[in-house]
Image (cartoon, rainbow, N blue to C red; front, top):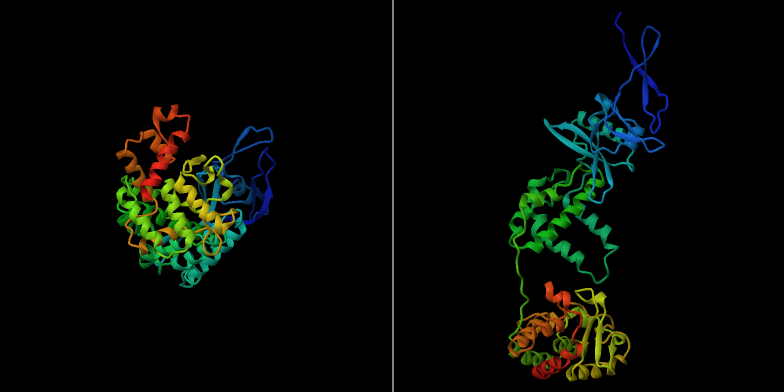
Amino acid sequence: MRLQAVLSGFIRYPKLPGHRPLMPILWFQTGSLCFVPLHHYTDRATDNAGAEITMKRPTILNATFVRQVRQPGRYGDGRGGYGLTLLVRNMKNGRLSKTWAQRVRINGKETNLGLGNYPVVTLAEARKRALTNRKAIEDGRHPHASKTPTFHQATEKVIAIHRAKWTPRSRTENQWRSLFSANVLPRIGHKRVDQINSSDVLAILSPLWHSKTETARKTKRYLAAVMRWAVAQGYREDNPADGRIRDALGKHIPQTRHMRALPHGEVGAALAAVESSGAYRSTILATWFLTVTATRSGETRLATWDEVDLNRRVWTVPGSRTKTGRPHRVPLSGAALAILAEAAGFTRGVGLIFPSVTGRAMSDSTISKLFRENAISCVPHGMRSSFRDWCGETGVPREVAEQALSHVVKGVEGAYARSDLLEVRRPVMERWGEYVT
């Protein structure tokens, strides 16, 4: 007589230290119970004493195995699992990622459907989703066709999530939209996120990778963020914009970008144009101040009165606002002190030295806009280049010029540089202030 085995349930196998695998009970027509071992583990666990115990890969997944498995790999749910698999991967931060996927054939083409991350999606829920997908395929429908967002829709959701952590004056959202509108959405904006592959990402990044490296980096980072969201939502299994794309594109060709600057002999005329521009007075004073002190735009725009010691004629920029992360002392020349004296007249010597028309910090584009409107062919940072050229042509020692610009001196020279040469720099800044005014 042919035996027909029917799986009627599970009981717990006698407990071993560290894990409790399950044993299926098979009921035969003979009326006898037979315990048939259906697990063949390949992972490892530890017992209560920390000793390593070998875990065998199960023929079908169970909750205990899913919870305890740590060996990277793909683990299937057996013949009756409708293609359900658990993908275990090590992440760069040292943590373990466990994601559910379903291998199915749709219109004659095999594909992976993402079902979400464990433990947010449990084994039971993953099986339920796999069954739902299989029923949709049997009915001739794509399981995700009605609910999977397009890349454009996914982008809007990701921006909305991140918007809460962006500061009100941040340009990050504008950067996302500008980069995607120019380089991404025309190519893949209409495609569902589960249909986007590595070749799509390569086609977007290849024209930018070596010619516009910063644009390429940002575009890749934003693309990867949207696809990570799609993976987390269960719309797909992998991220086509991950690190493998960088390997395919190769290393960036180093590029040197120079800020547009004026010959130092034209700085005085440019400042005269700013003075007669009719712009908001605080903006004009800030332009003068960053020029005569040879400081960066952000260091000047966010300067506060408590950073200035008028008695010692020193302005100390805190490390939180310098590029080097270290405080930078600036000797105040006569020209700089005159600017501060006027600024104190309408700020009362409290808070920001150069506030905007609203009383808040001046935008980083305010001075740049002033230069454009007055046909000054440089950027604010270019004034530092003009100062450095002037130093080189007037015999200012290299180490003094570099300290004035708050540059990090590398190598042996930097290792022995213990002084910021404040008093040595003072007459240099005095001459520079007289030169440009």
